[in-house]
Amino acid sequence: MKIYVDNAATTKLDPDALEAMRPYLQEEYGNASQPYFFGRNARKALTEAREIIAQCINADPEEIFFTSGGTESDNWAIKGSAFNDNEKRATITTAIEHHAVLNSCRTIERLGYPVSYIHPEKDGNISLASLEEKITEQTRLVSIMLANNEIGTIEPIKELAVVAHRYGAVFHTDAVQGVGHVPIDVKQLDIDMLSASAHKFNGPKGIGFLYTRKGTSICPYSDGGAQEYGMRAGTENIAAIVGMAAALKSNCDHIVENMQRIVSMEEHLIAGLSGLDYVRNGASKHVPGNVSLSFADADGEAILHRMDLKGICISTGSACDSVNNQLSHVIEAIGIPKKYARGTIRISIGKNNTTDEMDSIIEVLRQIVKKNANR
Ligand code: PLP
Image (cartoon, rainbow, N blue to C red; front, side):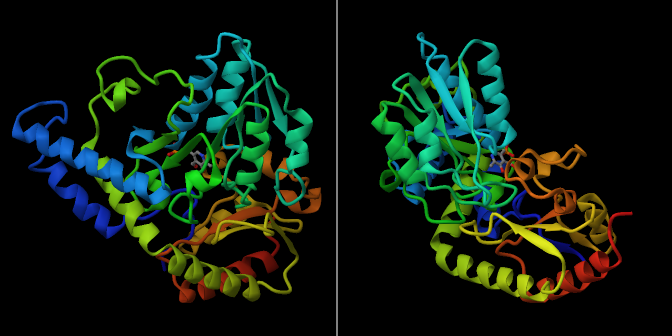
């Protein structure tokens, strides 16, 4: 048995994406900056991919900047905004961001740019009141994730952006867990920057984008050639960009049916776990398929390895924390009681999973948890 339910860590490549990429990995290897036909084909593919991606989030093509993924997009948004600000005005973020945001904030803090961190409510929700408490006319940037990677909570981005704008601040959201999974319209949300990563929505790894609304103050990510409107120098990875666009279009074209299927698998899974002693984290409003469970008197790490022995891939929290045995900063921030916190696992269901797989997970998980997974 092989069951992959760690789709918040990464996803299987969409067949449409693989097909779209193939020519650019083989015969169409031209450099998009060159004027001859080889280069022109690559440039056309680049332009079309930018248009497709812009359409999927209702942006303009000139507002999409290709990056190497979510980490780079977050670094660029946080540091690029700070380094353009001679007055060193403040940044506000949250205690439950991905480390790509948190560590970028730590870097700018060391360089003398003040940062403050909002604490979430019990379900991972960031309240408008908590932003109102910290924000001042001296706030330059507010960065709050659209959906949390560990517990799935969807934040009230549109309303938080209204607060930020009222104080003249720029609003960035790390939407790596949301893009391609829930409908996103940057104009309707009225946000200034958004980070995304292709491998989280069935695209290839090592490619992503940063949406930057026209007129937003941000300095270039890299200096060099004129690629990406002079904002991110370096020869473009056309195959990956084309694959990302195809994957995003495929997910967005089927977003409602994918969400419905995933929610029904999630409900099936939860129903099958009834009677076990656990708490569900961040369930009030969350990305379909992100199921964070904290089992009583258990060890998440031990559960992960026992599931692995049975051929099932899950996570203990965020993928990036799996090498780090400490309690995750998100689980800590939402205040899960000690009895449960160490027993946290994340099962993230994706569009390629099936209800039969949920049945196998239920059976294996019930056996493991009943045997008391703390040893
Ligand atoms: N932001 C969030 C919320 C994520 O979940 C991740 C990946 O786990 C990242 C950023 C980093 O994305 P990437 O793996 O593309 O660098």
